[in-house]
Image: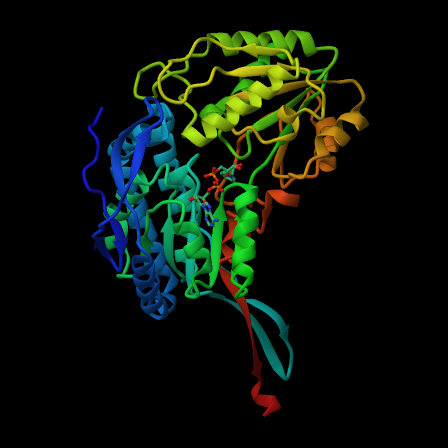
Length: 475
Ligand code: NAD
């Protein structure tokens, strides 16, 4: 295990930026401060936005093949430093090392794969008198704001399309997980001209300062629905473009024909991966009454057997909850469930340091209990019994969220019928937690606004520009 990092820098205008204020960064497995990160001032933000503004015309005019090559170089550097970055990731985020490394390598892959996308020029008319071309041009300086659950991958989901489309970027990691992102900035900023790629870290005040800053043309935000509303409100003042990837309360519907033994592991992982801190995790598991008891008992056994602990230790599958406020929120939800007389099926023991919470199933709670209605974003999974398919689809859709959902059945065509009736941006059949660089992730209802990934996600970093070109014959 590596020691605490010393003096990681923000990146402004292609160079490490000095800081005179710092925020503490805690290791969630111990709850203790192990490092500090720079706290950007309003002047730092102005400098970063000004640098990005100066860099924009040159970067937008750079041939797209060169922009792609720069991203490919950056991807290679991240991949080459995967071990170092994964060590740092475990310390600040808490996830066990294999999962940490998988995120770093996945982010590097994503950055390279995004360069396979091409922004089309549409031709809407090509007649005897004129040709009309719709180009998709970059927006300007983009602000990227990232949460703590997948700090590196979700940063790359902004870096790659924003820069590929010809924008310049100021990126802000979460105050809970700034370090790996800052280190990536130190490693890759040389791949781009000065000012193209800037990273600022800081405390709670920095996000609102950024969304209010007049220099940004767009805010690309990933985080909670509550914060997303604040971002939208702030962006409305000068009509900044926005993409909001927000919270979810995803339902998985398990039909009675599944092989319980075969699906239990996947259902468990789909709910508890990254200690259940996944926007698209299964957060409500609807199980048909015929198999309810058997699947519940199987999942409970998995919860008891699965090792939870410090991600730096070998053999641990899930780590702690990532930060103290989140830990308190999840504990509060559990206390409310206990006070309401709900049956909690607890997993095995967890360390008594840091922010650990046992993996917990809730046995068939009422549909209107907080543990069902709210996004826990922690290791608490309500299991809900159903008997009528129309009714369970209505229950699954009865939420303000609409991020993703899953259907499990031995009969794929039947599952597909259910998939079409789920009111979400993504539906998985007999799988979960899947996404690709070529497939949009777009929340329905209050799970989001706009989309990330795929050509549609890339186009969110552009605006259409229609050019009417006369033909010689019309002159
Ligand atoms: P959060 O909303 O608290 O914070 C997200 C980011 O916004 C952080 O960088 C934070 O510093 C910043 N921020 C906080 N207040 C702000 C403000 N007023 N203005 C601008 N920025 C502000 O979310 P979180 O707790 O870090 O992340 C967990 C949430 O993110 C969950 O709800 C989860 O479902 C969601 N999420 C969604 C996706 C997706 O793709 N849809 C992916 C991952 C996480």
